[in-house]
Length: 459
Image (cartoon, rainbow, N blue to C red; front, side):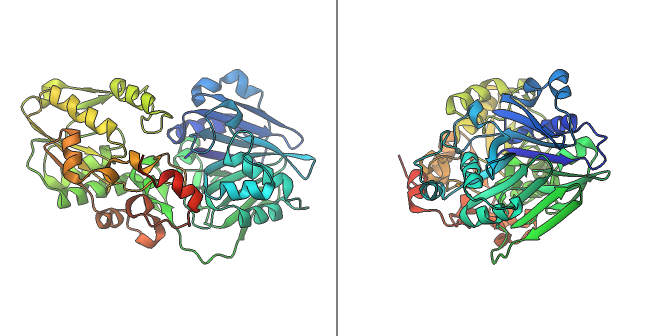
């Protein structure tokens, strides 16, 4: 997934490093493995990046050394490329044999091997698609960086929201389908870019609009300019952004994620009713849908699971072992609330099923008489090739088990998912404008056979 933020301070009177720090803090949910900030004063660029969380990597002393009026920041969640310092971003490369530029990338390329073949290499040094983009920038020389980027867009296929910063300007662009989010805002006379609008709120910036699919935006001392590349494709915004990944206080294409998720819960209650005494959420991502389920069903909502706020998202931890450890220390049930009651647990999704099974057992041990699991998304049946680490099809529980088998595996009294129709109705966007591939297998971007073989398999 990853999170990106950039700012161009036109008046040269803002602390762009601190603003970027706070913006990345609000995007921390998009990546917890590494973070970095690059700042330019028009003559030179300085970068600080490391493994870990934003708050662990930066302090006042480090931020004070990053002075200038342009800044680019990134938080990383790895899909292609190892989780190590070499792949932490922004990623530096040389353009036109002389100029240093920095790259921040969110997404995943599906023609990785073909680009490597074009470049005459087996794999890049760190097996990262961001490094591959950097190699293309070095190879495709042109007097204009914008023209070079247009050439790159013709060669790369997949999901990408990318921001490139030179000493004097910032250039942002999205893939023709707009699978990964990227939005534009203003802070006074300064322009800002971010993966999600919540990054604008924390620094007091105003949301303007989304960066459109296939659009290239350049921000320099002369202001903002935009180029739209010819495209015949529909939008295909990743539906998992609406289901889980984006923060509930963010807006995507004018749709507030909190309200959308509440509506998912309402539709779930209509489609999957059950007699129960109490609704609880799997905090925090399941909470808006649980609120919607409670409002629609009339079943009281209570806070039965207390979350340790210092534990990150278990889904995006890089290994299964870390995910399981995270579940054990992340949630603690309030036994007094559950004793003898029929409980509805509302969660946003079930991917592998590991977390859900542990939560059901936690609630049972706390004294619940019945445990009914309700999921505010449809079953996830197919892996993602565009930047969410759902791994192979063999690891997706809904692709391997029937509804009844999943219920038994979770140790639940009943199990119900939201339908695709109920989901798209809650989002209030045409299904043709959404990437629903993880739900229905209809990938908007054709996946090369050699890549499909890696994920569309049963081990």
